[in-house]
Length: 457
Image 1 (cartoon, rainbow, N blue to C red):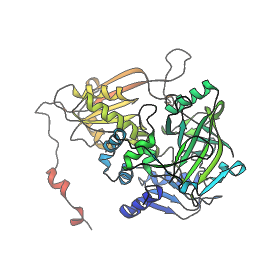
Image 2 (image 1 turned 45 degrees about the horizontal axis):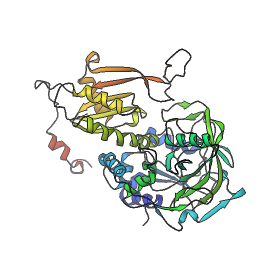
Image 3 (image 1 turned 45 degrees about the vertical axis):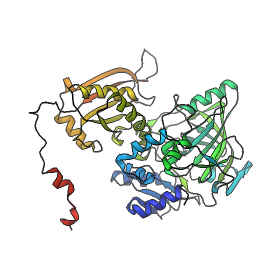
Image 4 (image 1 turned 90 degrees about the vertical axis):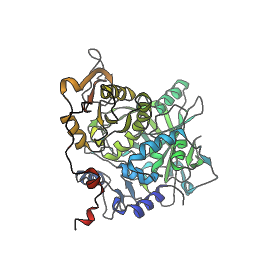
């Protein structure tokens, strides 16, 4: 079977049916659909959701594909603890896409007046969002100078049946490519891919060099080439087994306001100018599934953090061989990293925190020992409260760039933009003093190996 969105849903149904929920009741794409996600999230329930009936539309909506490491592990056939290592291996062992003559994404080809965005169940997620947004699309662009391809996920606000914004962070590769097009006075060919195997979304988060095409990393994750076909109206290859492709051009001489928008920091990002995407064609499967990402839910953060974890883990291991694992927890809104080390020298915790803060734009790095579960916020907080002194174990580094959406950012000079933040490092490792108290617990081999089915009804 082809490895695509439908195959992944089948895998979840067979291997972890508790992680797949179909919603039969009709829901409104304005707020109600995302309200269901928020309600489940509040109860710590994070299944893949399939909304079969969406008001005003015939397409089902699939959400929460990336809501947990457990789902990423299912997609890659590995364990949650091995996802980051698998991602790093795929970036090193990329597999180039394979061009084929046709594919399911060409079942329906719409051009001209038929190629309208209103046919899709675009979701309005938060109460004060500027309107409906496309949040899941992987946008493939071609560099007008080098011809290189690049792919990433950007948000798109619906402007008209034929146009959307395309909000690209200033430091991303697509933004760099758009600037090249602007300098040449030409638009940038692009195609927005909606709905495919989760490996596509994961690969879009790689932190590689410009020219390292993300569909090659997707092939590395899947262990086989991704089938691609030429787009109908732009010079971009698109995955043959995607659900939907929106073809068009990024206009490099036109801007529109994008926002307010509920973002991954869990605050509203204010309206800012964004480039405009103009639709030239739409292709899709005969009965397409529409994929949505809830931007203020864990799905956004788990996916967004994967790219950070992949690059930071490999860099940290080179600088600090005693690093065992890292985790960018959802609780930190993408700005917090936990690092687990095998401490063998005093001062290693501080050195590791410094290295982690330098490896990426984290606002805080917490370093812990091997006996602390970095996938459990409560366990990390326990280590911070029992293994630190604020005047010795904490340090700060002011005047650093973290993110343009940091609501507490401050300017570098009076009247300047509030783009700077202060970073925090925490060494929550034990001293190597042999008299430091032992952790109190029953024999670890006994309680970890218990099968509770033998004891509980």
